[in-house]
Length: 126
Image (cartoon, rainbow, N blue to C red):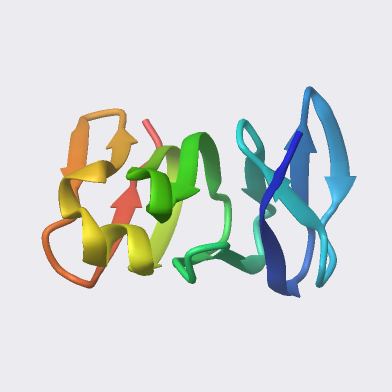
């Protein structure tokens, strides 16, 4: 699988799950399309994608990267993610700047479409 981004910062217990296999997150851990990013109860993690999108996760967060396409010369741009729980700070990269409707983050209660350059979302536990 092709690498779509990397872990840039980690504090505490965090992991990147690829094809069902969790790897302890460290600076430089690769992220693939389909990766699930998880942080523990006192943890935080920051990731940067190929288009310079930046996502920062707070404690007890789980986000899966469902789709990621970044081939601007071919007009292929898409970033789809699902936030199961926790908190996410998002800073848009090239995908959202070129094609804002190509970025979406699903939550248990709805979907966030990106219309600006950054947002913060929190999913409360049931």
